[in-house]
Image (cartoon, rainbow, N blue to C red; front, side, top):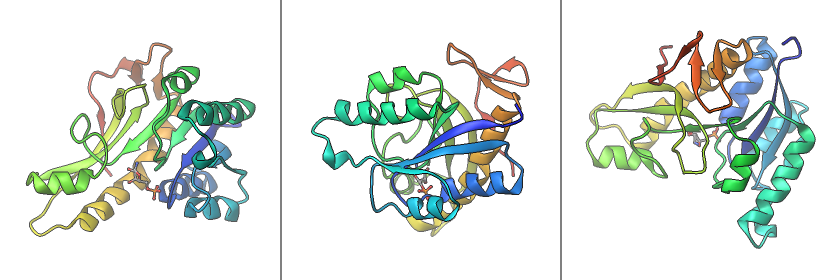
Length: 216
Ligand code: GRF
């Protein structure tokens, strides 16, 4: 695949994961092209990052749509016009409707700041601290119609130390995320990691029964 993976990256906020993917492409360690960066939030800082790197951006503001289905239909039209190999959710804070997920079945990835299936949803760092967990982490998973529920491709773990705050965990998590997303995309671009049409994950030609564990 010489021209590389065609990516659509969806963001809502800071876009530091987007930045890590851009950096990997520009460094030549990821054979991919970002065909669009979409944000539901017109003020997302990630849009500025994309523009700085000359990438096409598209704002589809959810506030302009009365219903999720109408918003998703517009998003779907835009993405179909771009025809990405993969849709990469990178801090995209909207739940996608089942119809949208079906339209791009097995081609949507998300990064979640917890060791799924533990701590689905929001505020994972607060909840892990409140439960006195000793470990937390990051998961990259395939998106299905259920929130944070698709098969997990890769997990990265970090220890929770005494006295760690939410922002300490966010920093540790982000450090891992910025290595993990480019790594997963690279493995997919090399066909080392394959998501088949049934949503099963294969790594180096073997069916993946448990998530891969990231080690830096
Ligand atoms: C990340 O922590 C990711 O796990 C979660 O949203 C955050 C996005 O951060 N889904 P950024 O916008 O990439 O900086």
